[in-house]
Image 1 (cartoon, rainbow, N blue to C red):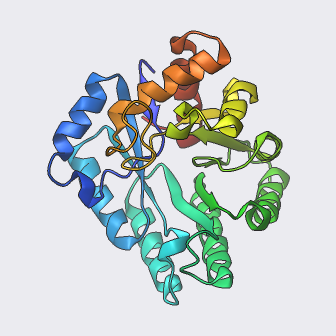
Image 2: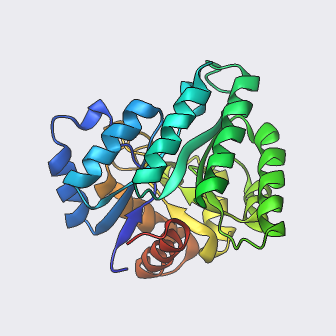
Length: 264
């Protein structure tokens, strides 16, 4: 665990088609050893698995994003099951609920999430949760799911709240039920008091870092395409917030990522 781990990036997206190999190399050169790349639909999952064969620094996760669910989601999830029987992946994700875009009815989102939680149980994999304007709806679902895991003797962490949207109390609740909290580029923004408070206050053994590339670009590159090589900027800012050395943040978040995703 000599370097950073970007626990959430989307290098499969067309934003990187012209220079993907260079992006991966820049990440390595900047001290990012591994990058977890979640899927959002079947097409992206297949592309990510191909990328991981070309770039062993990319670790795949597979899942259907709430904004990409449709009435045929059961067929899609059966195809994910077939993938999981033959491929090694880090997690089920990116899955969850999204009330911001409102492209998919809430009932369909909940059904798709539940089906993928069952998939995570079936293959004993952690989950990567997307929640946007949806904490009120997703919290009881994850409460029940984590309670079942605890009752079966499973040991946390069970998943990560990706680019966490809530306040400190909500973060502490998710930590209590077995989740890690991931911070992204907004922790570097001056007006992000809530995220800065979370960065300062949550236990270090519950913290992950991510870029969510190509989105949520940190300062001083805000407004440009994000990429994993910018992850150390998030680590450096977190170290300033916590008044510790950057190496403490790098080593702790890398250790936490390995514990969650069982990365090689």
